[in-house]
Structures are given as C-alpha cells and as structure tokens.
Length: 257
Image 1: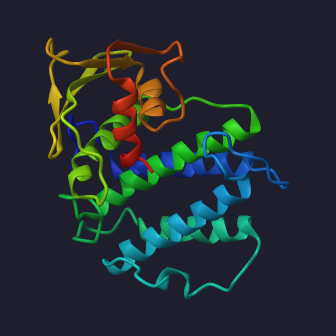
Image 2 (image 1 turned 60 degrees about the vertical axis):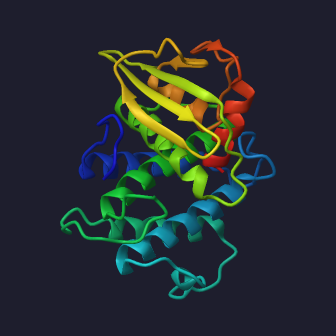
C-alpha cells in the first residue's frame, strides 16, 4: 500500500472502521429520501445506490483482480428497486472480498503505482467514512472521524493529486507550492504539493515550506473534510494563509469527483 507520510493503518483497523461507518451510514439513511447537501443533486436514496455500486464493483475487482468493464459485478444479483437491499448486497460482498486471511496479491486499481489488495482495504474505509458524513449532513447530526483514520484520509486524498496529469481535461497549472498541515493531538503531519504546468507532486515534509504560496492547516478531521469538499475554509477548524485557495480547490475538485 502506498502512503506518503506513513499514516496507513492495519487491515484489521480498516475493516473495523469500514464496518462501524457502514452501520452509522445505514442507521442514518431515512426511509423517505431527503437531499444530500454535500452531494448536489443527490438524495439519500442516490447515496445508498452509489454505495451499493461501489462495494459491488470493488468486491469484483478484489475477487477477480480485474476491472468490471460491462457491469459484470451486477451479474449475480437480481434487479431491485430497494436501494437498502442493494447497498446491503454490496456491503456483504466487499466484506467477503476483503478477507483478512487472504495473502497480498496484485489486483487492478486506478492508482498510478499501487496495484495491491491493501489499496482497497484503505480505499473502502475512506469511501465509507466520507459518505457516512454525507448521510449525517443530510440528517442533521454529524459524528466525528477518529483522528488516525482522518489523518490517513488526508494522506490518501493528497496521493490522488499526481493522477491529475494523466486525466483527460485535467486543469494542470503552474500554481506553485502548497503546504498542508494536519495538527494532531500528539504531533503535526506535513505534506508539500508542488503544481507545475505538467503535473502535481506530493511529498512528506517536516515543516511548512517558507516559499509556499498557500498554507492550509487544521485538525486531521477538518483537513480530511476540507480536502474532500465537505467543509470550506469558513470552518473555524481550518486556517488559510496565502492566496489562490479558489484555484487550489478547483484542482482538488478534479481529484475528488
């Protein structure tokens, strides 16, 4: 598994968080759908359907080692309009696929340098916690993200940025240097992003780069939510120094669609 700042957790911990956040997500989703403010155009039913597709799709990848190109991941399942049933099928499939007893092996992923099953342990935990937050925002009662999971979430989303240069229509620009600071309860963790006209590179840093055009800092949870677009810089837990935040957020938006 690739981690820039060494924040990765164990398989057991990812599964524990995945299971707990799925339970919170499921408990929060109402029978009568409501709008999800953090996912414009989505209802809570759309969110449940999305999670079902994600879980089934990635379970297929883990089980077969290849990407589903023509909805092969749906073949074993009957068509249903019950989004909760569909999401439940998906959760059962991904938990079965992410078997803690399985040895590591190569598989498909969309990551530029990580084709391990451990990639999917990490990805599914973070996919679930962010969409659990979405469900809670829709229902008006948001619970916290544990610090270790949030810190790893910051690391994971920042590692998506080097993909930008290979994505069609990616708005690469010579933005300069951005320093990201997650202010933990025990220690602070720093990342440095450098944007050129060709690509973005992300590295671990020991401190804020004095040449940084933009410095963004906050608690690990706040930084995770900010980078995923679930809160903005008006949140009191986020501090912005420098200029160009709107351009940076546009670059991040491509990474986290």
